[in-house]
Image (cartoon, rainbow, N blue to C red):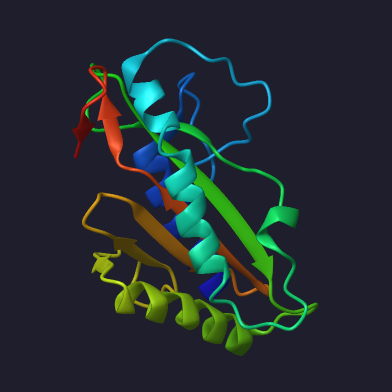
Length: 180
C-alpha cells in the first residue's frame, strides 16, 4: 500500500506541474531528448541553458549515495528534456528537467532505500535547500526541495530497491525571463 501511495503522490505532482513541450504530459516530469526538435522560442532557449546546472546538481546528489557498486552517473542514460510549466495555459513557459534512478539492491530493501535517500536529503539540507510542502499523504517517503535560484529536487524512494532523483530548473517565460 505504501508503494501505491508513493507512486500516486509522485505521479500527481509530476502531472500537475510538467508537460512535454508538445503538450503531452510526461509521466515522471521528463522525457528523453532523442527526437526533440529545437525551436527558437525564448522560454525553451533559456531553459536549455540550464542543462549544465541541472546536470551538476544531479551529479552532486548522485555522489551522496554510499554504495560500493554504484554505477557512475555518466553510465545512466540521459533522461533530460524541456518541460512546460503549468502556471497558466495561455502563456508559454519552460524549464529543463533530468531524472536519474539508482537501484540500491537486487531485491526490495526499504531500509537501504530510506538510508540512501536520507543521505541525499541531508546533503540538500546542509547546502541550503529548503524542503517544500509535500502534497502527498504524510506517510509518503517522497520529499521536495528548492534552492534560492529556483531549482527543485524530488527525492523519491520507490520501495522496490530504487531511488529516483528528479532535478528541474526554474521556469522561463516567452521573453526568456525566469518566472515562478
